[in-house]
Image: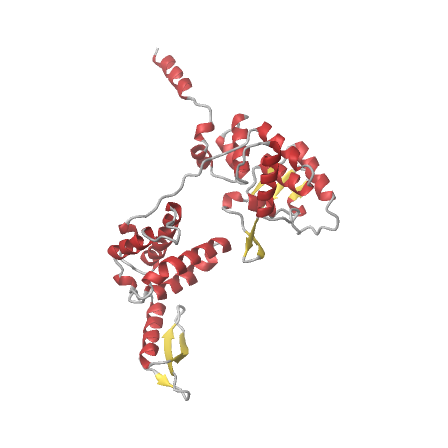
Length: 355
């Protein structure tokens, strides 16, 4: 290992290394103020290239990001890197990966658990759990692919807890009352109609184009999702592989959507039919609830409302899961309290079997 001085008095490194495919390559890094800084950078660079866990946490995070960026959806990636850069990296960045212990994780957790803003408010339990999960994900990656012996974050245990959100939904009469207040704005009315009667996710709705509608078969194709990220419209893959699906529209909705799309003069086949934002629909829901007196629910609760309607109509968890893009076990677990109980029926049949 050697460092060199350039004509401007700055130190630089010129290092040869083997790439992942066995080729010999050269890396030059300039602009160091001291020889020590240059040599430290060279050592970290070589550790990173070899996957040597004597590298610092900061160096490993660079590796982790390089490994993971292309595997995650953009909005997920932005959330993940924001948490790592702001809440984890500042604490562990100079520590060697191989030297970080469960006690270090506990000390870091305690700094977050005791933090308070100027109003005396700390982080929510849900956020604390999210931060810890991201920390644990980094160490899990090191265990799985870089020979780290164990995950210190897993040993330390989680902090915070996942918030169980109350599942709200509208009955059909409540929705019909609300929808009357939306009829003065076609884009709002048809957006809410599609959300309620088809059980789409909001991102799925906002990504719809005319190409996604087949009015002969009365279907909607779900194969993408809309996100607004860093002031730009971004179209991504749906949330899960199961989310790629075709949803059958009821006759009345197919007729409504056909009329709506006809009214959108000059719209290209690949342009969004709902060129609105999530905030717009939140404001419209506020307006509709205020005008009708219907209880305020979240936009996503319209999806719950659709599922609860289908359960009330007697459809199975498998059929519902196929329609909304879930696994049937998820439907059974999340909506178990809405399915009619069969315990008495089971007991009655067991009595017959015994007699």
